[in-house]
Amino acid sequence: MFSNLFKPLTDLLPHQLRNKYFLILAVFFGLLIFVDKHDLITQYKLQRTVNKLEQDKAFYREKIDEAEANRASFNENKERYAREHYKMKRADEDVFIIVEE
Image 1 (spheres, rainbow, N blue to C red):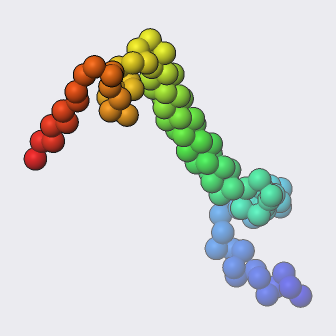
Image 2: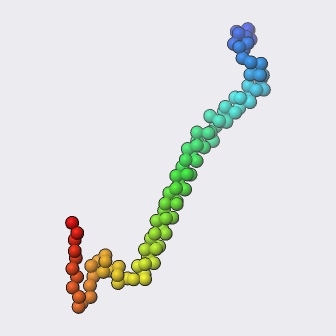
Image 3: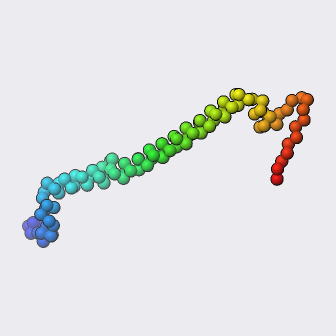
């Protein structure tokens, strides 16, 4: 009864698409690609997250290297750092601060 109802629709499809094995495989892959827990959309979002995290890792690695270089220069010349950043001076000298406008 149903075969007569869908006969005009199935006649429009090419012979390869009417094959039951092909239809089963198509439904299976459709489920895997679009409905599964690990579908393509989820994998794409996860890959974008991984890429962003790798960029953040490279950025913070660069900042760590800069901080280590600053620390090394600070340890080499603590007096200069104190004079420049905290306006410290020796007892026998005067400090003049020149502000450029």
